Image (cartoon, rainbow over all chains, first blue to last red; front, side, top):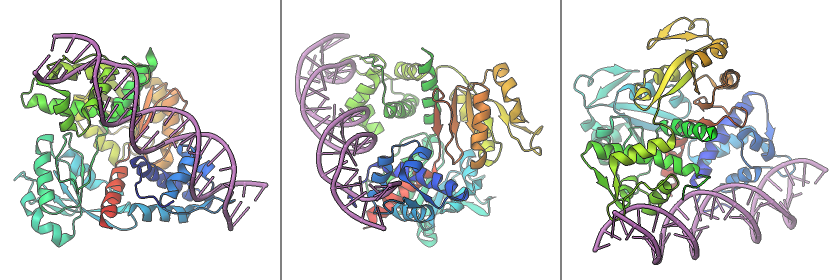
Length: 210
Length: 210
DNA sequence: TATTGTGAAGCGGTTCACAGCA
DNA sequence: TGCTGTGAACCGCTTCACAATA
């Protein structure tokens, strides 16, 4: 198959497959069929086979998929078989929480620099990282090889943070601030707001009531 | 229209609309057309009109939508025009970060109890909340009126936490642990894992390279 | 024989185009 | 006149069904 366009939903599911496969591996499973993996992920088995087929033929007919091999293949397909260096802008509650969240390292995302425009914060250290003024992004990005920007500012500062990142030639942005940002179209942006999920739960509960 | 079934994607977009509308209101806008709101949200204007039409007729033909009124209507539609009481299980890094994240209150989600099975943590306080053993959920849930469960345990503890929540008749679950959980079908579950978004960014950057 | 990989069918969400209305 | 609300057309993802094959 090896298709050109890959549905966004597929990427989201691949993340789920990795999660479930890693737990399966921890429990000692070496091989798994699309049918069993499907049940563990609450999706259709054809869905899994199709998702994987976008990137290659990873299975063995009559047998299934080798778990460790499949994890590696998916990670390669997503481009997360290496370390991505990240710049974090906005060292507030959310920013500090992310700096302390050691899963970043484990999952291949290294926060290599932290920025904040608050003079009281500049110069202070968090998790071995000195907080720097965002104006220094332009120099530091190429020096440190920063590729992904993480915005954790208040909403009214999000666009300014985005502008700094764009000026510094960052290649992708993940925005935790509750505000939309505008950047050139070649720079992918992902918005993270877990209140979406809380709203969804609230809605589903409310719906079930009547 | 007032449809029976509402696409999940619509709920996600309504959360975006609220975010953008609140920022518009802060900037002094009182009325907005679907066309302008669409641009601010990076979606199609028919999309917005259709999403809203699922819940009622909130606009004025020839004029647009009254911003404050629309925010209220959307919040009513989602069932977030009231406070939802939440139980948090797993007071690790993520759990503490959420307990300190004051947006929960502002957005109508009150974390009213915190649970952890670690004897070293039980009895300690975080943000005016005493950490309690999860076995007490069954009593405390009805006492405190807990409706939504927030799982922030390590992955291998997620299912156990889910079981406690189900036993306590919690009505919906939001799971931050990187593991799938099984609960009865009438209980909605939402998974939150912002590494999904990092993977997506990494993939999009990688894709743009070749 | 069991399970993958995939063309074709089905289905649900998105966009269009315009009628309806302030 | 301008913008909303909505049936119809469109499009793309999901599921089915089965041929391919270890």
